[in-house]
Image: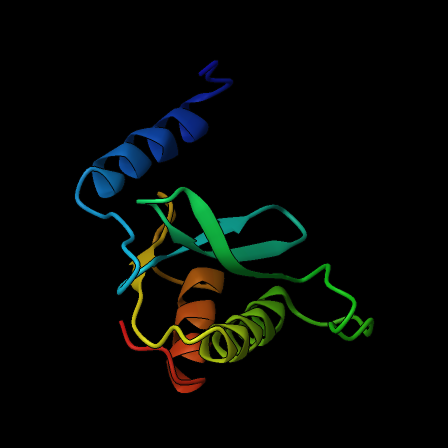
Length: 120
């Protein structure tokens, strides 16, 4: 992987450190989060089969088009991923913060997913 700057390299190293201990199985898939400057994405992945079970993002059509704060976006994505996961029969997940610090948008998404019914 070509590293562009120190911040990306730091996140990449943290990501590898977290991922060596976390794997998603069929019983407990992995809930991973990606955060860009404007959007936030979440996926629930079964790593044994290499398949995405459900996904949600702030770019989906169900998402309201009204301008809002990024933490509010993350909260809505967390509720959406929890709803879709429960519909797919997934109740327990392992949370993969993907190298990001657990605060702000990542924390907001995780708490909203917990409130939506996911256990992790």
